[in-house]
Image (tube, helix red, strand yellow):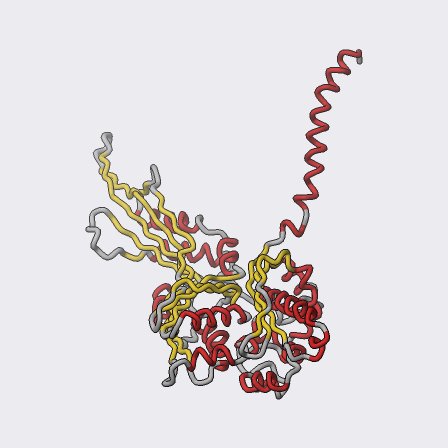
Length: 460
């Protein structure tokens, strides 16, 4: 190889080497597990007993313990994404040892932190908003031995899906009731059954949804409803050679939507106007429509929706006496294990006040979840006034407050009674948290199961 040829190849090769070196330099950043891990924003409240002997000697230690407890509560809420609340309490020592104790490594960053506050309930309070490595929490849970992990992580099961495909044709008026297509239905059902999912009757699902707003309804509705509609027109062509008339069924448009029946949210919708889609036989046309709609959904689509770490709901409270009491309710929501975040978005004295809450996902009826994990702890906290679940429609829940006959009772109960979060807290946490006898007596009245060494006075 002569010198000029070598010099030319070197000039061509050098940029390639620089490019390769740049790619190799950046590969470790893309492979960093912490960067790739999914995170979850969680608001949590830490508590401390200000009368504990250890704090009399070192006030700074109390602020550290408040922050540490708040971080553990944030991790506990993230654990609640994968572990049912009552299962978490029953296995608290195991989860504390393997997961909660690693709060520093599982929290990416603290976004907000309130100053320590002494409440009228006798506890010191501190709220934090933290970004938690949710994937790392799941990994920590899965690192438990097979025996310890058994029955611990939530079993979501395969999604259940109801199906309805209706057909319209241009000869009928727009006001005419569309006909259901059993052929398209069955093709679509077969598509979902091949994923390993169970298919439910859409008519039965609609009947169950009418009862979904009541706590008495304990029958499980289909997780998702897939609704499709196809519009056809008929065209006739006369063949010149034979004089025969041939009828074609032309698809003019079709729509599809998928509804999450637990929240009422339309999680998918699409409209399509196909070109050159025609069939000689109506049944063949309907069969292909079922296939076209089925192609819109993959197995991962439903699983990713069902396994979302959280869902947003709106809680409507009627009967709050003043704005300060509304803020007290917001703080109580933040403390509860299954509520990741809570915001007061509208307030009206003795009228309708609205809270937006983000809750750990549940495969069941949210009306039942809110009754057992939110209302029961709050009613255990309140001395006289009670909350009552009135209805749930989709992701909107309405709760009425019976404030009692005496003015100001509900505000005093909210301020002076221990946090509702302690009603469902593990005995191990309460025993570690509370040293003062008066505080312990207050919590025992709300959570009598603590005296018996049980998992709490409210079955959640």
